[in-house]
Amino acid sequence: MLDERRTIPRYQADFNVNVEYNPDPNLASLSHCDAKVVNISLGGVYLIVEEKIRQGVPLNMIFSINGSSNTNLNNQYRTTGLVLRCGSIKEETPETRHRYHFEEVKNKFYCAVQFNEVQFELSEKLSKCNQVL
Image (cartoon, rainbow, N blue to C red; front, side, top):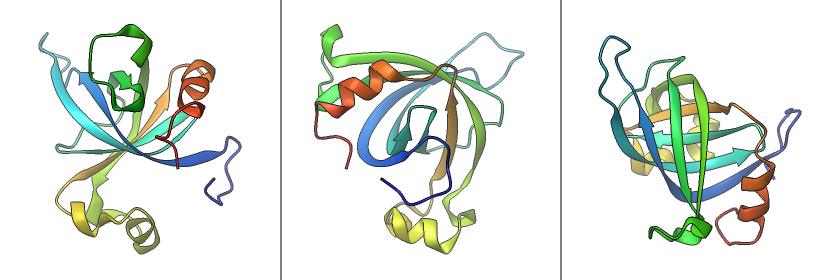
C-alpha cells in the first residue's frame, strides 16, 4: 500500500484497462484507448494514457483480470468513472515521477479517475490475482 494521507488505501498496480469516452460532448462518437493502471483503490484509479482527456469526462472502463484479453466475462470487469484531473507526466511531482518510473513514459499523460461507485467486486477480483503489487 502506498503511504499517503488518503481515506481509502491506494495500491500500486501494473496492468492495462480498456477505456471508452466521448472527447467532445457535441459529437456522438466515442474514443477508445488502452491505458496503464499504476495505482488503484476502492474509490478510483490512476492511469497512464496516450492523449490528454478533459477533466469531468465520464469514462467506461473494462478491466481484464490476470491479463486475460479474451471475451470470457469471468475475466473482465466493467465500471465507470469520472476524470478528476489529467495532464502531462512532465507536470507531476519529481516524487511521483520517480515512484512510478515515469522516465520511461515522459511523453504520455496521467489521468486520475474517480469511480462512480465504490469497487468492492473489482477489489475482490484483483485480490485473487497478481496484478496489484
